[in-house]
Image 1: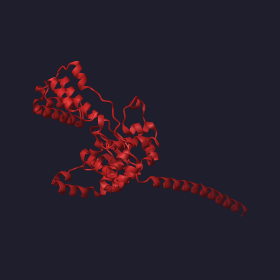
Image 2: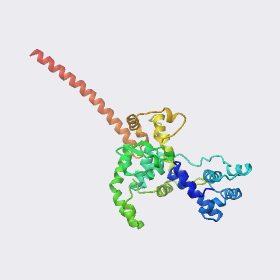
Image 3: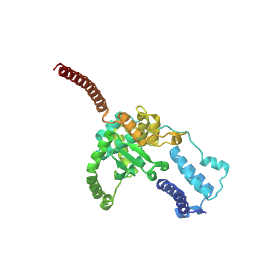
Image 4: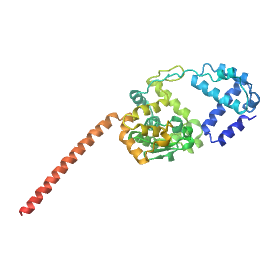
Amino acid sequence: MYSVEQYLNLLALAGRSNKTIDLYRKTLKYYSQFLGIEISDLHNHLEYENLIKYAVSLKRMSPRGRTLSLSIIHRYYKVNKVEIPELETNVIKQRSPPENDDKPLTLKTLQAMMDIANMRERAVISMLVSTGMRAGELSNLRIEDIDGDTVTIPNEIAKGKRGGKVYLSSEAREYLDHWLQTREEYKKGAGNRHFTKEDYDNDDRLFCASYCSIKRFWVKLYDRIDGERGKYHAKCTLHSTRKYFRTNAVKTMSLDLVEKLMRHEGYLTGSYVRIPEEEARAQFHEGEHALYITRGDYRIKEREIEEMRQEHAKEMNKLNRKVALLEKILKVNE
């Protein structure tokens, strides 16, 4: 029989991410607490009747959370070769129909949240919308992962270890620059507030924030602006920014580029879609205005000004050619 620590150590050797291992440990710990035992002794209490009782106790949990928790525990049973009768297995693997309990995140909501957010919160929101990355990935980014307008998401912090490069719109880069100018001051203040100054001094995370703290400020802002809730959580969550990116980016960018930036592994995507990095970057910036939150009108004005410049340049070229021709004629007549 594998103890929980032995099991988790083997998962680490098999290449599972730290985030996945932490989730497994937490889930198995909750199960141990339900049984009233220490997690180190769980492998000695793997009767299938215990798992059935636990499954019944989770009836108020969201369908997705319940399915995930039971699948983690069920896998631990299987690794330890504990046989569960077919009928009881159906109870454990019971799947509820998926509930679309959210609603689309709108530009109006984002703009209202940005209006009341502080500098760090604005940088986080604009970065999530610009890149389509997951909030858990963003919380683990380091300063060295940012190079100008390019963000490199390391494999070790990415879901499924599928990291990659994503890009910052000019708007997101501006908000990030403002945040970086105040980052050191924030770290000092945070250290004083939490009495852990030495920890914040050595914190090289881009936003000096865990996923949970980012989630807390998102909920705080959303509750002040909208606050509509579904059965289990707010109608617009942190993950809504990723959906917003997918919905709006395809308006001005190719689907292949959007899938590449989101690092999806759909049918043939990973095998056949090959967009050179510089081309991907150029395409992104060409269509980045679809992801602006507070600069929607600015992009329109900027485009109009650029068109005027181009028209002016054409007229100047025509005039210069006429002047050159006139000068040539005058020289001949001399």
